[in-house]
Length: 298
Ligand SMILES: Cc1cc2nc3c(=O)[nH]c(=O)nc-3n(C[C@H](O)[C@H](O)[C@H](O)COP(=O)(O)OP(=O)(O)OC[C@H]3O[C@@H](n4cnc5c(N)ncnc54)[C@H](O)[C@@H]3O)c2cc1C
Image (cartoon, rainbow, N blue to C red; front, side, top):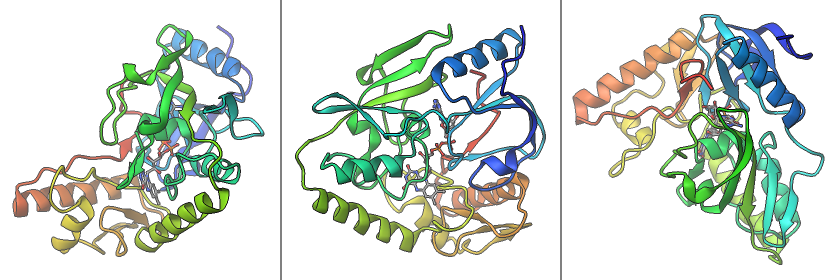
């Protein structure tokens, strides 16, 4: 099958993740429409190329080794307006729209519901796939349905009830998200919504290394007791460095890229944290950050 136009080769994945590490990808595509995306997926599947799906890369690390498959980035799957009304209380949003841009648009139009989801860099696709959120709730609370490309390359809307949502988990698995329908509350006060978002964002920026190249949260928080960041702090691991990677002094659950860090540097730090926390507390931390290209092929 002829390779669709627009697929690049030998792409440096360092340029594509928030942490800025990783090797090269044999093929790379950033489709501008769902039709284009389906063509690329059909081609990759026909040619038996493994597909690794990428949003903004804010929760993903690429291995330092080159990847012999296709990285499919969704950031161009968006329209000029960040959303379209499905009805008065439901909106459709393309997978490539950035969560924060969506929240800003909704706030300014007095549409409530997502205003607390700020300070989370990422696309709608990546954020729904990982059920992003914080102490005040998760994005799944607002999801009505998800438009996906399934394993047969069929595009269909799937009701949110069909997925098993839990903390930082959607159950969407190897489906590829193209758009998401959210429930919103119209006729809310834009000024109030903007204030809520601004205050939360300011708080997050003061406790997380938002301006640095980082992994996002490395571990999920344990079900009870101190959060992962607190456990790392109590263990005295903040500031620990391997190569160019350092456990953030600001928040123990983030690793920052000080200079030219490799993914191997991060993984060594992650391993050290896991061993130390287990030996001190008996708690096995569960990794939240995703090592790309090692998941089941899509
Ligand atoms: C400074 C900082 C602060 C953060 N704070 C938070 C926080 O408060 N709460 C929180 O939950 N997270 C937080 N994160 C993590 C990150 O912002 C979220 O996980 C975000 O939702 C990731 O979106 P993304 O588009 O970057 O996904 P990526 O990192 O690109 O991908 C994440 C996963 O989603 C899959 N994926 C991506 N797009 C699609 C799609 N269209 N269809 C199917 N699968 C897809 C990928 O294959 C991968 O498995 C933070 C990260 C940083 C760097």
